[in-house]
Image (cartoon, rainbow, N blue to C red; front, side, top):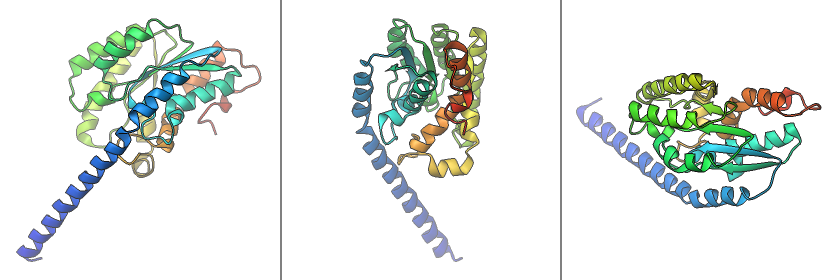
Length: 252
């Protein structure tokens, strides 16, 4: 290839990358418009009565940003499975806030959490900490959150981030999550392993238009990560005489 050809190809590559970035930015703005819609949906549904109280701590993934509807987030999928397995009604209090870091969860979600007496608890927080990674701040917040949880809470490690630079940070974060969880006797949900197992196929088929938030399929994968631990807990803690663990999400 001539020098002119190389320059032309490089310029085309730059233009293509800029167009791609512009499209992602536009797609992110589209999803941002759904933030108040999802938040209101969860607030409204938190008023519904239920035999069991399921409380979720988290960020935009728990809110279901990127899904076709709020209840198609992993929280919504798990709530449906709790109802199906236990045969009981379930009230869901989704404390999650889009954009929440661990520090913000301590500030905004934990004070509300400690006033509740939940029967089921899930925690998936920390993905937003990777952008401005501070392991000391992260561990301090994780310790505060985990110390406030009941022993039956299910805490997820961080999902797979695909790119090596981010994955190095995620590896540190997940070591912290597992270590602090072990100190408190909490069950760690292997979200990282479950999402990493999806491979390139997952990157192509399980993300929303911003290529960051999961879509309906991606949230089902998140729910599958919780499935074994949730099934064991429901069978152990609640009367489910006519339902086998295989009936829980992800067992098919």
